[in-house]
Amino acid sequence: MKRKTKSNRRTRVLLGLTLSLVFLAAVCIAGCLCTEAARTADFGRKNLSPCFPYLFGTDWMGRDMFARTLKGMSISILLGVLASVISALISLLLGIASATLGKRADQLITWVIDLIMGIPHMLLLLLVSVALGKGLKGIVIGVALTHWPSLARLIRAEVMQLRESPYIKVAQKLGKGRWYLVKTHILPHLVPQFLVGMILIFPHAILHESSITFLGFGLSSEQPAIGVILSEAMKHLVTGKWWLALFPGLMLVGTVVLFYVAGESLRKLLDPGSVHE
Image (cartoon, rainbow, N blue to C red; front, side, top):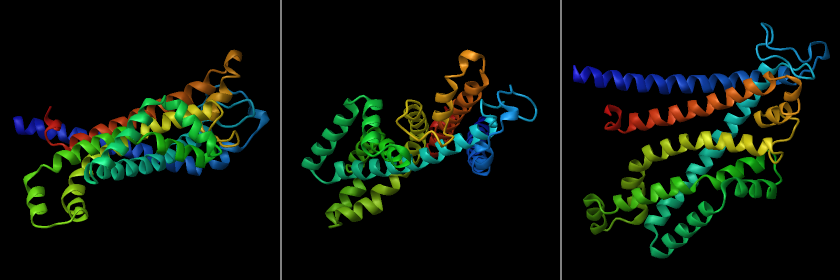
């Protein structure tokens, strides 16, 4: 009975991960197919409240808000994925370097981590994005350069613990080099932490991308990004056009929650002990 319960829990976790990834992939694909519809204006249907042909209503230019929301969410997801992968790779490289390249390298990398974590996150992200010219390039690099410290610190701690393992000590006594140890014995153990950390960076990346775009320091207004949609909707809420902000906002929150669920589900699958909690 106990074994069956554990199996059911693992099945539920796997199902949650699969459904989250399928939904997020569907949003990306649908967004790519809605590019033209998201930009098409028709003043004959402007300011329509949610109805059957237009599930999320239309805006002041007659644009379909459902298509604009899907397109904006797909942009945010793709930006978040790209920035998260880059940020996680930075974390992996610096975390391993800090724990394996000696005391001076460790002190330098730890100092950089503390420095970045000591600066208000949004302020640093805004500065990096503006310095790089805003737009797609500025956001991706800005998010990537500001989201790696926490994961790098976790990887550093894991590598320092692995260095004390008996098989690492034996390999060192057998004359194996530093690169051999990292490639053969350390990297395989870091894969679970790396994957989970990378997925859990996604929701932060999406929220921060939308936030700085909302403030006018991110993507240009020509692109139907979620931040642009919400920023434009603020001007029309006082006239009763509530749907312009409600549905894009719910889609953003739902996507962030699904990324978090996917990350937690993957963590439980990769950590057999936690799935039975």
